[in-house]
Amino acid sequence: MTEEPQEITTLVGREVYSNDGVFVGQVEDLRLDVDGRTVTGLALTQLNYDLFNEQVNGSRGVILPYRWVRSVGDVILVNDIVERMHGTNGEEEPLAASH
Image (tube, rainbow, N blue to C red; front, side):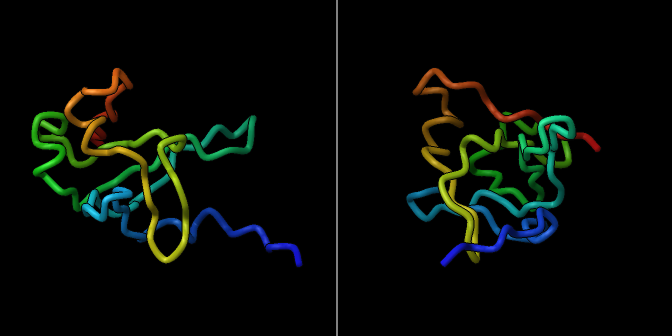
């Protein structure tokens, strides 16, 4: 049985949680690589400011790299968001989104 590909617009409005069950935010938009036809980032709003307080600094939201996504279902799960937000794993931080 093959799985039908989902429309990328179905990601908009989904809630994002860490793999530990911590609410991260809600997908408002997507960052795309049009030439490569891939999603490269999730633009989140309605953020959990306990995670993002220092990073957003007055911005409307953040863009998480899509490679952080662990799974997509009724909600979107991302890996190790708490560690990434506090810079304990050496990975890049999310980008503040001011759009």
